[in-house]
Length: 128
Image 1 (spheres, rainbow, N blue to C red):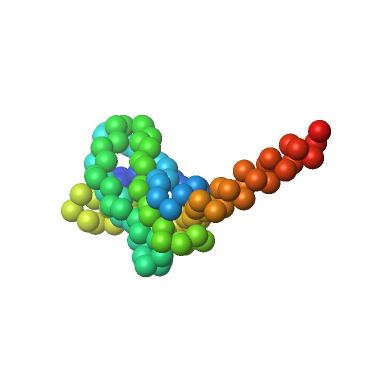
Image 2: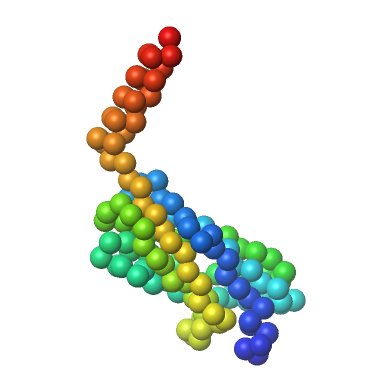
């Protein structure tokens, strides 16, 4: 049974970006089996004080299909944090090898947006 479930995998970009301090990033669960499966996606932030990732509900993936999952994340500060992802059965048995991504939080904040808009206005004014 475990050999069959190794045909279910998780795919995520090596780096994902949050454009604010809260958001979600996409993860794909791929089922290469001829039967539907229900799996959990277990997540662990390498620095939970800096970036928290929310658990996601178990996902049912139809046979031969890919299910896109949005993983909610919240950053306390800007920067990069590694997040480990592991597929598991509903009872928690790990499936396959864990994978990881780096989540980059880039919340500009109010002052940052003023600087960006101001620089854009100066650029347009200087163009004339």
